[in-house]
Amino acid sequence: MSAELQHEIIKSDVLNCGPRLELVKQCIYISFEHGVGVNRLLSMGLPIQAMVLLRAQYEAVVRAYWLLFIASNYQISKLKFSWTFEEQFENDTCPMLSEMLEKFIKADLLAKLVIQHLSDFKKYHLKQLNSFVHTRKQSFTRDIMSFKGEMLLMLMRQSNNLITIAAQIMLKHTVPDKQKVIHYLIEKYRQCFYLDVDVDLAVRARVEKYFE
Image (cartoon, rainbow, N blue to C red):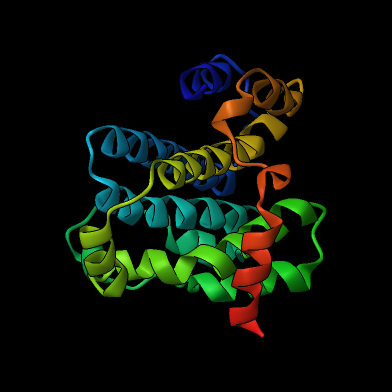
């Protein structure tokens, strides 16, 4: 699925919209590579390491949408590099993840459904993924308990969701607009994705109680 999607993007004519879209493209390609990494780490029996990379993949996708819709021209300019040694020690002006998502909601964008899914991902998964990144409770718990096969499949499918969410930006800026490719791939590779209809409502209700 991923290879077919990448091939579609590579062969497409993408609009030249200047440095903003170029940075978005870089974010998307990084998220693609993270997705490949998640897949390979899971197949190698390294699920904890895959969770660390899934966290990075998620932020790369959110960042891509932020750069496209929200970032100011000044913030874009701070991400243009001269490839000097000194630049490694300079701070950029990119906000943290929570701030980006808050700005999305306030902006009332056309991509409301995508933003809602990204916000839900943060609500239900980010605390656990951060725990893996910082070697906290989840790392120790899962190292002993391990993961059920069904959970690993769900995580792989969610990583694929992020791949297509990122790709949608690129396909929106191709000539002609090729966003329909996403729907085609989801139908063709249905088992690769975790969709709203796949959510166990009983489990969701149980989880929601922790947010009350």
